[in-house]
Length: 211
Ligand code: 2DT
Image (cartoon, rainbow, N blue to C red; front, side):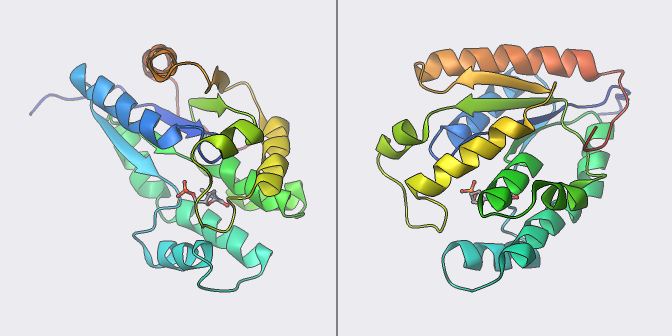
């Protein structure tokens, strides 16, 4: 309280195929950083708690039919509606650990056959992550992890296609971590990457997708 924080937080995104362990690793990372006394919040996309998020959720549960372009723009709008809050948090020194972001947005839609440049365009101007941790797992291995659920995208062939598009999107902010190592080892690697990123972004301005 009363302490002025002039160092911004880091935007750290975890990406990967369904069942790569993202969600578990996100929550472990948040606990770890909290334990270090850092200001940190756990976020995820889609954020199903907004009106747009509700439409996405119903679509994913096969409860509604929407064409691919419309769905793509809904996912994207779901990030835009959170953009200013995200910026405020980061500027106030809070680090955000985000489970999926624009990379999921583009990879999943491009995997359906939409043009990748078309998919990227509306993501332009969203805040660029300081670090993207990509939890790498083969689609086959992922599908063996207890099987996929019932949501629309949880099918082997589709996940193979998503994997291909993730490859195309890799940029300099990406760090690839082998998701098939023991969970503690994955956790440790992510911790180190996150601490490094939080440290090194402190005096850098926020930047925008995509550069
Ligand atoms: P979760 O299972 O993580 O809730 O994701 N997806 C996600 C997209 O197609 N576009 C996006 O922009 C995002 C963020 C990935 C639900 C599914 O939604 C997909 C899996």
